[in-house]
Structure formats: C-alpha cells, structure tokens
Image 1: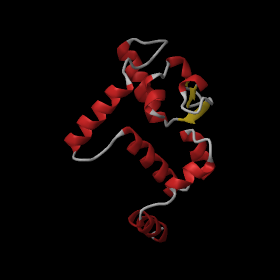
Image 2: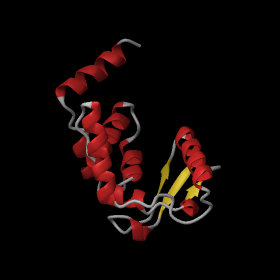
Image 3: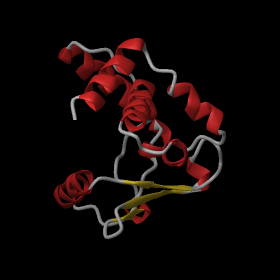
Image 4: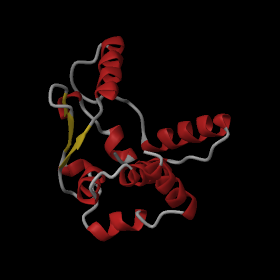
Length: 139
C-alpha cells in the first residue's frame, strides 16, 4: 500500500476471512479501486491491534503520511538502514518478482496502471540477479 492508502485504512476495508484489503478508488493515487492480498500473519497483528485499541469500525490508524515518514526514518536510522516508504514498496516489488510472482499480479497488488511501470522494477541490480541465479541453482 502507498502511505496515503495506509493512513486511510478502515476496519470495513478488511476481509479477514478472505485475507484481502479493499482500497477504495477515492483513497488511491490512480483513483481506481483495487484489492490486495494480505498474509495471515499481518491480519493476526491487525486483529490484535484492533482488540487493544478497542476499534470495531472506522479508521484503524490515526496517523498522517508525514508522521509515517518520520517514524520510518527514525527507526531505520536506529537500525542502521536507509528506508523510506517508497523504498519499502520498491523492495516488495523486487522480492515478489524474484520469488516468481507473475508481474501482472504484482502490478495489480501495487496499483500500477501500466505494466511498464512495474517492469521498471524488474531491471534489477547485478547483485540481485546473481543471488537469484545462485538460489535457483542450489535447489
């Protein structure tokens, strides 16, 4: 999800049984609704958070995109890594492609209108290509 989409996330947007989050058109950069698949572990964490916060409907997080950026910078600095919200999206796309997720599925997941936008991410750094080949050959 983009940071702006994340900050507008509502309990009603999550389908816990089907493991999907629906992102309404008005919350997306492209103004097109989409549905993203979410790992069960993440949904379990969201459920636990909602229970602690006693939230049953409405926005899940009362946070601005700017605050997300500040927190990410603070904790990535502490961890000794460089990370900004777009870096996380980029990493998700690259790892999905390396894990052989079909590029059209990745495109839908991240909300790119054009496949060519997603294909930019497939231009991997040489080290990532080498590691991918080594993993494939070690199986």
